[in-house]
Amino acid sequence: MSRLEILKNRVLWKIYAVWFFRRIVPLMVVQVALIALALQIFAQKVFVSMILQNTGAIAGVSYWSVLKYLLISFSQTRFTVQLVILVVLGVGALLIRDITRTIFTYKSMWRRS
Amino acid sequence: MGEDLKDQEILNLALEDPSYFSVLVDRYQVPFIRKAMGIVHTSEEAEDIVQETFTKIYRYAHKFKKQKGIEFKSWAYKILMNTAFTHYQKLKKISVNVEYLDPVLYEDDSLEETKDLASINDAKELVKAIIDKMPEHLGRVLKLYFLDDKSYDAICKLEDISIPTLKMRLFRAKRLFKKLSTDL
Image (cartoon, rainbow over all chains, first blue to last red; front, top):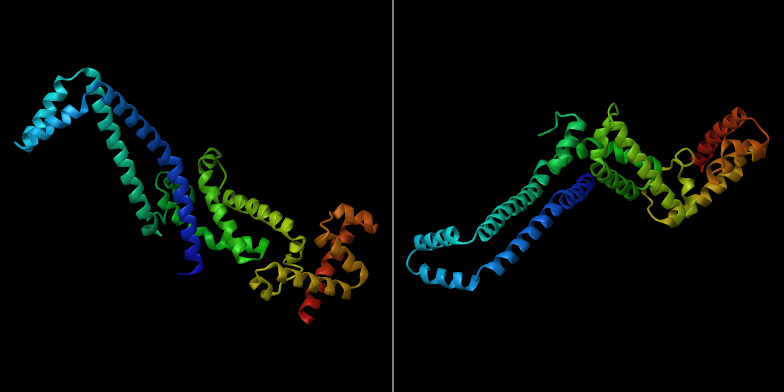
């Protein structure tokens, strides 16, 4: 590897780090904080171990039964809990999107060079 | 990808997708290194300056957008020069002998390959030896301007001469310095 290539890689590393800490980290911090808060509320309102126990018992029947049980539980629970679950799923999806974006950008950084 | 775009457009794209920045690095790293070498004269320092410059360009890219009518190139070179001079000042603090590395005073290629302060000290001795060989009035202005960092006004007052005379003496002194250094 030539000196210029080494220098270019060093520069691109720095640029990637700047981008990551400026664009991605603040988003991730907010997302993780939101998920943590939502899960805390969820844990206060829902008897999680009982749900898991019931899910485990139904899992023996079929996967479809598990899905049906979870959907029925969701529809019959309080509005606050429904909202919390939706927030966790929504923000979780955004978090996964940002992690994927970070990995793909990292790869394309050196593919383009 | 992105090679046909203008610098400014690439910079804007790089804010969202940093991989575009590699196009700018390809375009400017060689001229930047050349420019930085003209100031610090060591490849390691020049590379550090270039790296820092690119980082600053990316970091302050959002500020550049607000200044219409200014070319990316001139803006980038301004950052490069500021960074290079900051490095030069730091080097100067580490060793007061850095000013001996002025390109006009010393253009020996072998010095470019030297990387340690010991070599710079050798260069200092060499420069001193050459100045001693020069006519007193020429050696003196050269020393005052390049080694003591005196301004034109200060030297004119010290030597009791006008600015055009000083410029002419410096020109002659530099030419003689070059000749003597190649004769060594």
